[in-house]
Length: 141
Image 1 (cartoon, one colour):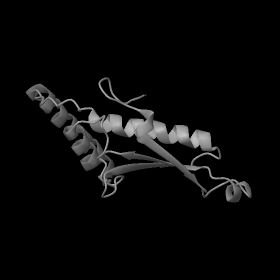
Image 2 (tube, rainbow, N blue to C red):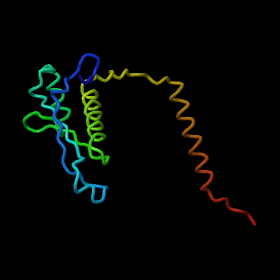
Image 3 (tube, rainbow, N blue to C red):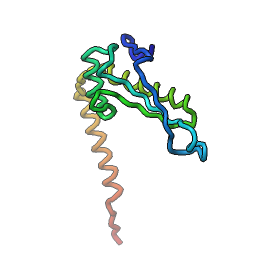
Image 4 (cartoon, rainbow, N blue to C red):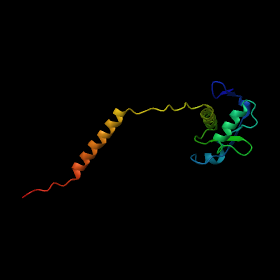
């Protein structure tokens, strides 16, 4: 079981991994070994998710999902297939965690009149300093 949030875990069997040849560093090794890992997760057909969770995932991860509702995560950072598989799984968990956790609502605050006045006084002071630097003083000879 892969733990996404406190209330959601996804069985390992719902994830499909595939490997293919990767681009990037590796010399001749890159032409012989399949190190790039693609993780696929069928959101639409997953029994672990509720309908609301499926809708949230598909709307927020629309760029990663295809028309069939399959989310895809690719990793090809390292030259090791095992490390890339682990990285893809971590990225998948992070993505789903971000999508499914609600952000706390922002509380509106009020700036005190004294704070506003201090800010305006500081701005006036700064402008006077800058104006004083640019004024040319004419000498009387």
